[in-house]
Length: 275
Image (cartoon, rainbow, N blue to C red; front, side, top):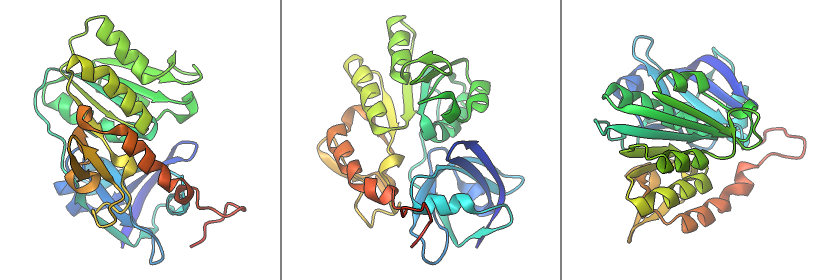
């Protein structure tokens, strides 16, 4: 059993919880994730470790309520417990000096990119951050991300915050303006990451993509996160979750991801969580 220490509402349907997990906090590295189960009847779900506090022995998880498990997790309050927590899992991000890094987070993908950007900043890199969301009400980690960035941009689909448009529009502008960029790291909707890689691949700009969105059980047992990387088949949860963006077959990946829409929306007509 793992206790919830703190809970915050970051945006509509997006919450952050802090869990008492000192052993995981000690070993966790940027890019890694945990797998949790709310109760005995619950499914296992993978969530990125968005932050950790070694002194308090806690880790923070940010999630969007899209299905019955995340809905049920979102109902829990500080002092209550979840049944299982396993981690850290997945391969950690390569953290070293690259030079100038563009960190791009779309929607809840900001929670994946933020700890990576923090670590890259500590390694001496210059950080250009781009956050995107459909509107200002769904922007998360804006203050935190801006605080570690040398340059900071925001885009929203409706123009309610920052520039109207997409994160890829800002990346295009930076490239057109001859901004020296040594690495791009990104996480968010698959179509967003596909477009980013379509921009960076032709110019040979190294791009690291996090495939957290397609993971299901987080252990490689279900095979649902199988992805084609070059000529090889990989599992995002055990071989990743990060991969070189130019090698990913996004068309197959997006088609595969559509298979789970019904499960993600598995609520009954009264919006009551049932197992």
